[in-house]
Length: 626
Image (cartoon, rainbow, N blue to C red; front, side):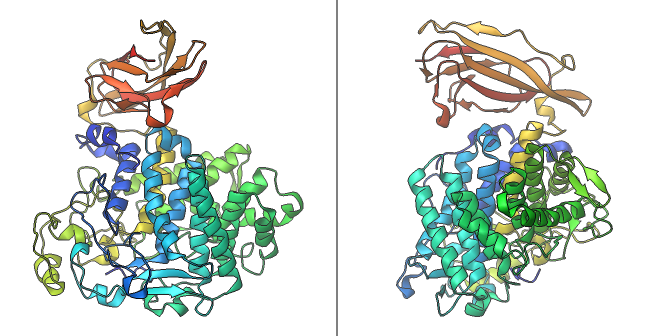
C-alpha cells in the first residue's frame, strides 16, 4: 500500500505517434518520448471532472463530492500514488518540481512542444490548491482517510471509502505543508508569468499569504493531521520555511524573503545541514542550490558571506552524488543507481538527478566549477550523473527493464495501482466493491488491463533486483513525487542530446548514412504568395552509432529575410524518416506549421526545428504564408 512516508492547452500527438514503433533495447536514450509519457501519468492521477482533452481514456470522473460535507469544494487535484488519498505535502512538492522545470527548462520544453502539457500538469494542482486555501490562515491539507482507503482495492470512480477533509488553521498549524504549498504557488507563478500574467499574480498572492501563515503559526502538519503520519510523516518544517522563502525571493525579487533565509540560515539549518538526499520531506539541498544561484549571479550583496555557506552545503550534496566528497558519499547499487532506502528508492534518484542538472546550469552560467574535497570538476559532470540515473530508469540496468511504465520493450506490468489493475469503468461498467477488488484483481498474476504510462515505480533494491509483483508495494507503486522531477530531467537531457543520447529504432534506419559532419548550403525560397524570401539554414549538430547505423541530429533555422512580419507559415518536409521537434503536423501529408506559441515571424526573426534520422537531410520548402 502507499505507506510512502516511511521511506489544454494541447495534445502532443507528434511524439506519441512517432515513437509508438520504438522497441529496441537502445530506446532508453529517447528522452523526448519518456518526457511525453510522464505527463500521461499525471493525467492518470487526476481527481475531479476530467477535461475533454484527457488522453488517458481508461479514467473517468471521481471525487466529485470532495469537501462537500465540510462545506468547501475540494474537487480536483491529484491522487498521490496507487491509492485515492489527496495528500497535500507530496502533491505540493510535485507541483513545485514541475514548476521548476517549466522555469529552468523553458526552452527545452518549448522546443519539444511540451510547455503546454507542463503548464496543464501544474495548473491541475494549483487550481486545487486555490480551492484548498480559501482564507489567509486556512489550508485544507488532505482529502480521504488513508487507513480506510488502504483496506479497499477499487477504482477511483467506484470509491466507497471516507472522503473526510482535514485542514490547517492557526489552532492546528502545519508549517511544513503550508510552506511547501507556498513554494509551489511561488514557483508556479514564475512558470505562468510569460503566458498568463493574471493567473501568475493570483498564485503569487496565495504564496505570500501561505508563507506568512506557515511562519507565524508554527508546527508539524502531521500533529494537526494525525491521519497522515503513517503515510507522509514530516521530519520537520524548517527546511520548508527556507524553501518557501527562497522561491518567493526568486518570484518577487523582494529582499525581505532573501533576508529571511539569511537571518534564519543557522537557526533553521540551511547552512548547517549537509545532505545526501532531496525529497518531498527534505528540501535542504534544494534550498542550498536555489540560494547558490543568487550568489553565482553576483547578487549576494551584504549577504554574500552567508550565501557562500549555503553554497558549501550545495557543493556537499553535489560532490556526494559524484562520490568526490571525501568519503561522505551517496550509496549506489552495483548497477550505479543512487540508493537511499528500500521504500520507493527511485524517487530519490529522480529528484537528485533533476537537482544536479539544475545546479550544472547555474555553475555553467557563472563559468564556475564544482569544488569537491576530492578535486574540482566541470559542471558537465553533474549532467553526466543525471543522465546515468535517467538511463538506469529507462532500461540501462542489470534487469534490462524500464522502470517508467509503458516505455521501452520491457517494463513493469503488475503495478501496485488500483486504477491500472482493474478494467476501466468504460469496459466493466458495474462497480467493483472494496473486497471484490482484492479478490478479483489485486492478487491476480496477469498483467494490468490498463497501462499507466509514465508512472515511475518504486524501483529495485540495493542489489538491483526487482520483483514485478502487484503486492510488492515497496517496489511496484508509483508516486507523484517520484515522477515529477523526471520532467525537468528528461527536458534537460533532451535539449542537451537532441532528445536521443545514443539509440534508435530500426524503423528509423536508412541504408546510406552521410559523412560524419555536414553543412548544407543555405537555400533561399521566394514563395509566390508575397515574394518575401524565407531562408533555411541546415546543419548537423550531433551524430552517433547505434546498431551499426550512424544517426544524425539535423537542425534547421528558418529565417524571415523580408522586411515585414509573416504568419501562418506552412512547410513541406519530404524524405523524413525519424522524429521531428519544433514544428507541428497539420494533418496533411508532409505538411507542417509553426507551434501555436509561434504563429508569426517578425522581420529578421528565426525559428529552429530539429529532426533525427540516418541518411541525408530531409527536403524542406515553403508551401504558403501570409
